[in-house]
Amino acid sequence: MENRERVLATLNLEEPDRVPTHVIYLDANNVDKIMGKPEKDDFEVIQDLQRDYPDDWLNQLNKIIEEMETSIFSRMVEAVLKIGIDTTQIGILPLEVINEHEMKDIFGRIWEIQNNEGNFNPFYKNGTINSVEQWETVKQNIEEQATEKYSKMAKKYYKRINKKFKDRTLVMVTNDLMGVFESTWQGLGITFFTKQLYTNPDFISEVFNTITDFTIACYKSYIEAGAEVFVESGDLAFKTGPFMSPKLFDELLLPCYKRLTDAVHELNCKIILHTDGHITPLLDFVVNCGFDGLHSLEPTAGVKLDVVKKKVGDKLCLLGNIDTGAVLTKGDQKTVEAAVKYAIKTAGPGGGFIVSASNMHPAIQVQNLQWMVEATHKYGAYPINLK
Image 1: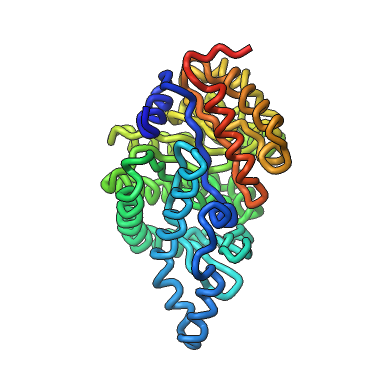
Image 2: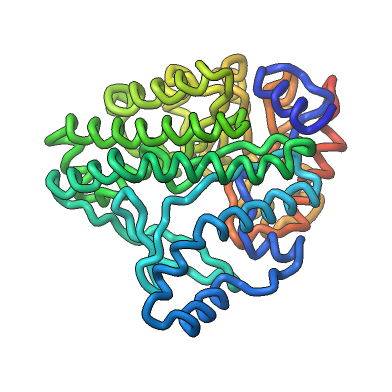
């Protein structure tokens, strides 16, 4: 089977020729290790603009953000394929540089610009919305300007990258940094969000719905450009349990997620939920939202793969469970192989499982990812009969 056929069969809960492999992305430092350093890193680009446009460098930089993102994520997909991984995901980032150290997005969040070996690494710093009135201004911008702007950008962006890779793999789409849940609480800030959650839940519902509308519009544009699989990014849990009570998730977020999954399914596409943390108490929620798959299955957060497979393995394609805290950073080949073998033995039979790093960060080692691929090829051929 080719990569695309293998991944789609697995998302349909079928048995392909072997278990596929996936990463949510590769950090730029690891892309550089695989592909070689670009002629200029991100910070050298800024230095050039500051030299050539001392009074207007910020505006000039924001004009080329789209071009930079296309180049960066195209290199990332190429790097993923080079080390043998079947599929990964890309997506626009609605960020604008506001000074040498910070970026801001359309949801009111400030992001610190961290230096990852010469590459921009946005790191959430704080939210800026601390009143209903401030939200109204943000909402107006999303509805009247940002939705149209980023929908057009999404279509153009994905068409360029998909044209290059569609014959070699299935490139999923993610709304990383734009997920409905995280964009809401992070834009409002944890203190204001929590207070409103219990004193004004209708307001939280409104924010969720506004961001859902934005996401659906962008997803439809991606589909027009050829996208087939989406990953809704939203960490719903800590390592100890869900961020909110399951009741609040059902009341406030489920209707939005259901609108999102329905919109994708109506256009014959698939959608996966990515969430870190101890997600087990929310498995029924994920199914009821209409997602086709669930990613992370974070082992260090107490997620038991056998429990998840037994409970929802006939309803959801499962992705992940390969630890990024130690196995893919410090583990030797034997350790990586054991983790992959266990995951395939536990969740692979019957189909519907994709081996994947449970998350991604700069400390993950390229060699360990290659061992993950090799172990999947060794143990993941169907029919699976591991002891």
